[in-house]
Image 1 (cartoon, rainbow, N blue to C red):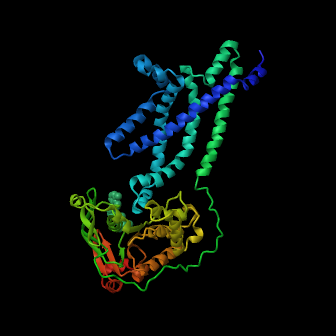
Image 2: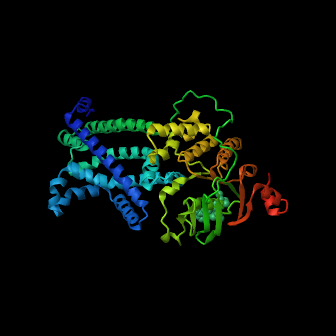
Image 3: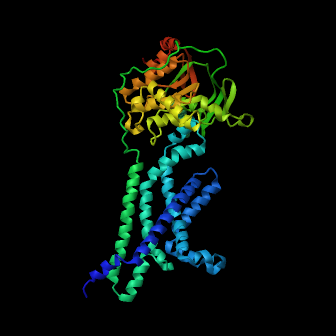
Length: 500
Ligand code: ADP
Ligand code: MG
């Protein structure tokens, strides 16, 4: 018996098949959209601080991934036998099919979201935190947009699986493509001819959506995006203007920031204990010392990125942060956190935002003015660090030094009175170190309080009012750069470290 082509081709015009194809599209799109949303909440639940919430999320994923979809479909469709009140809804095959598909797909998609959320680094959360974003703000503005882009290729793939899985819903008599085909060939026995048409419809749906989703993926992929190239002038050659209101000065008054009896341990490893530090307003302090001596832990304790075990941080003598032992008696005011800006070793710029948008993030979030004004000021801030010509570029299109200059502008945009720098040039190529140090030297002259962890000894000696040498969690030197240069002549340990 020859293959009946005219019959197969005729099926491509069949209203039954086109209706069935529409049903498949509706069911797939609805399943996908609902599972993408619900799966996201399951993935968030998996990261909850509450153990019970994490357990429930894990249990859900475990159970619905273990259960074959076919079993679930038959179960949901026949549920009215046990609970007659559900029969109105569940006896509609489309509805029971949708419920079973969503239950099962949510579990798979939650795992995709979970992986994508993990891929958004810790530095992104910290960068949001130091700009004063609340945890919901960090999720909404920083984490979700990035994780969705990371997840999109896998989510698109999952959509295609869903389209094909809908064929299983034929077992509960939903008139989808496979069932329509079966009805045809049980009457005319043209199995192969009918199945070719069935295959055609599935391939058509998958191809159309695959193309659409790929286009969406390309549209959202900021790493491929080119900067809308503004008239790009050559970067001003090193001449970076920072308003310098006179020479270095310190204001008389309460210390800008003061740590009293700080103690911090990681597990059994004590980083420092009984550590005191007081920084005057307008003072520029460099903290130097060998790696592992606790410099990073110290400055991260000053703005709450690390929680102290004991001790109190005061801002202008007002209690700001307290260690676990004192926290009951002190209520920190979250607005105070905005008075401290921070620049990280790895910049931690938001990769899905342009240079300008990175700088605008904090002021927009805190409603520091109309969008127009915030933008205007952010552009001035970029101008100050010599990055205005690159305002529309994404972080991945900038060199390390340029990224760090944007990060400095981003911190300055919140007008902090104190700036913390944790080895701001350690991740940079040697040729771009200078451009960042120049900006920092300009800032140091402008009267801002600065605490800088650095290995750049020459820079530290030139710009600091005071240098602190830390070793093994202890302050072993605390004095003026001149004194340090003097002391190193007698102290072998200092001489080893302080090589200019
Ligand atoms: P530095 O910045 O001077 O190199 P750190 O403050 O980073 O030093 O680290 C001080 C000590 O604390 C080191 O011994 C380091 O291994 C340890 N440490 C730092 N962060 C953590 C952490 N999150 N968990 C456990 N140990 C840590
Ligand atoms: Mg460090």
